[in-house]
Length: 227
Image 1 (cartoon, helix red, strand yellow):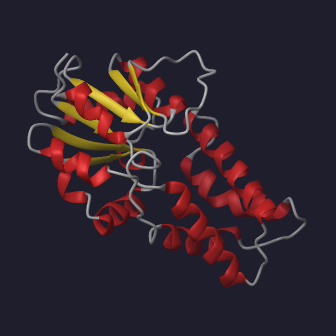
Image 2 (cartoon, helix red, strand yellow; image 1 turned 90 degrees about the vertical axis):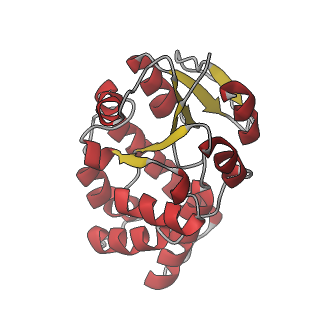
């Protein structure tokens, strides 16, 4: 199969979101004068992942997620806070994080001469654009498709339908989705009839009913798939 259109997720596929998240939450806690222990960070990470899963499933809106995550989190510890203010601070710190995943730039440089490369992300558009710009990856992409602009989020087939309509000459057989999330990237690709690559560097076990077309544990292994 020849793939000419590549649709890349951002977080934990091209940019290290775990590093960005840890930087942002550490800086937020320093700013508000709260102690951040490993257990508290693990609690935040777990709550945040749960909220994003709810968002993917359409159970909550993006606005609800962003407006409530810090209110909910500190509420677990019996504290009443200005969740919106904390959210604003946190998001500004998150935008500062742009550590690249190993070989991400090398991969995009190799592929950009022969492929049309796009971003498909559920992340906040302004935050993702800044992170991609500051990481030096932005020039490799023809366009960035962020769910808040699209109006639908991965894995909703409507997200990929929007992307398909915006790309001139889009063809399902020649398009490939690359991402780390089975529940958004791989499930969304399957629902829309697109082939997919599950980037799984930690060798997680797939316990879902969603099967990627390919699986890689190293970004440069993508080259042999799309060559």
